[in-house]
Image 1 (cartoon, rainbow, N blue to C red):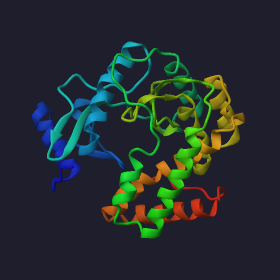
Image 2: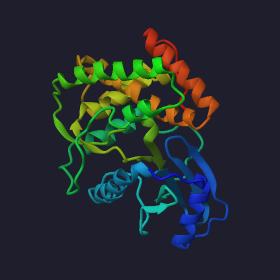
Image 3: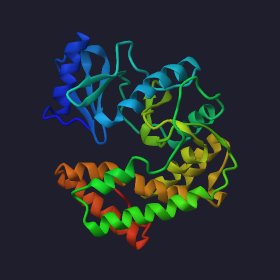
Length: 292
């Protein structure tokens, strides 16, 4: 992996110069696994990702262009040469969808989008097979923020869940999956919702796209919201015996970005990471988790 002393915003400014765009007024929108910046003069957002994500990001650009051509409401990349490699970062440029005041799209919007996605044919783009924890495990193994006992516990629990996953039967079958589908990856575009963040798209069991919304009880998702999601999709995952395996896989998966941030000295991320680990080790599903 390439290392760099350039900040994500500095890399975004360099990308603007390459694209011939003004970086005046650039401002941060989000900083988590990927840093996102608003570029107001281009009505665009810049996503600054890690170097090791280059291959998945190139796929995401091609896939979202194909999905838009299929009529699916997705966040769309702009028509520039991308992605760019800038000092160890991978930079992409996307259309900006200004978000109104008020609540974000509810789970029912995601349910409708996933129902349409899962009915599409496999795209003419080579996608990997869906593999849970493929990105998580090396992050855990190399972490400097995790104690040896925490590292051992996460990897051991991952082993147990991956073994259980390998023995599941998936009634919805295999096909194109988003890979990171949850309501937080939807954005308003007028009265419609669009689905973004396609870096983890794959070919895999469709249930994996549904389970993430159920895992959202950790963040306060209600039974009424889960019913609305299932009604919109047309299938209720709640009665499937494999649901707990997928939600627990997702629980561990969400630790990855907090581990990376804690490794970089982010104290807030380290506190949330420790809290999540405590609840996971104790089996406590009653305590809510912070989103970021």
